[in-house]
Amino acid sequence: MSRAEWMNGICLIWSRGRLISPSLPVGDDRYLNLNSQKRPPGRNLGEHRLVRRSGTTSRAMCDFHAPKCKRKVRNNFAPWLTPQIKRLMFERDKLRRASVINNSDAHWTEYKIARNNVNIAIRKAKTNYYKRYFETNIGNIKKSWKGVNSILGRTQPATEINRIDITTPLEISNVLNYHFTHIGPRLAGNIPETTVSFEDYITPSVSSFTLNEISCDVVHRLVSSLQINKATGLDGISARPLKEACPKIVPSLTHIINLSIRSGCFPEEWKISKVLPLYKEDIKSDPNNYRPISILPVVSKIIEKVIFKQLYEYLTDNNLLAVSQHGFRPMHSTLTALLEVTNNYWYLNIDDGLLNSVLFLHLKKK
Image (cartoon, rainbow, N blue to C red; front, top):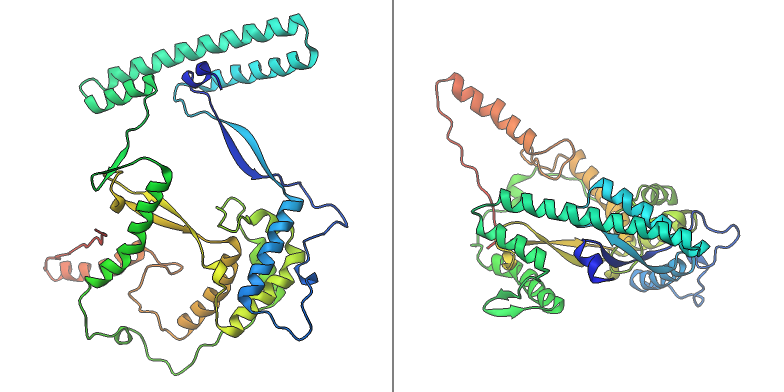
């Protein structure tokens, strides 16, 4: 990428992904049928080893039918790139492709004219953008310097955490990883002991809960309902190839889930997630201002839905959930909680000539 392209706001980056064909070749289902794996007679593989083996086979399936590819993508991050300029860039690129194919002076001349027009339009748009930017931020030193640094192409300085300069992605990852792994035990150590039991807030029940094994039809519906635009876990298997190969992998996946239910163990490899630090607010160099988002393997979400459905039905059928719990429940939210206290308490107090004193609490990790 040339300096002119960078200064004009056209940043070419590499994107990695899988090249997935519209449909799998007819009759070519190598690596798809996980049930075809042979094991010694009389040997019953545990769910952990079976998951590892199926994960290896699934990755081989993806590499065979949807090989990983590396391609250039254009990151149009520049705010001065208008739709009109993008159309000019599209025409310029089209003329360049035609010039490469035909290799005639007329085509190259037409392309160069289009290229020059694009450069002129970008320079003019960029000038107008920064003119408006500085006029809008007169008196704002912070934003003015931000604009100057953007024009000069200056990078962000090193992040200072605990008086130590952190520069490399590995160092930043280690700092955030240490923070995320220690904040839980640290907060738990500050919680005072109590004699109150959670059982005081639930309705007693004489029934017992047992997980039931599931059928292939249930797993098929769950796999078919996966959203292909969700992030991929550490196993590198996204939802799309699973949906494409659904008829072939469902029997094996059902067997693994039922084996997990019978043994009472969740597969270890499906517990491992990659953590994405999500910035919330305030100072960006403070690890406390980041919230960890765990991205689990796609297949682990299927067994989670199986367990959740059975457990939630048991809790609701036996009235084990507190009536005042409005979080993480269907048809419940902060709005229903507000309506309940308004209709059942606040309005009654107002009718009796009383005042309502309300204390709102916000829990924050520090």
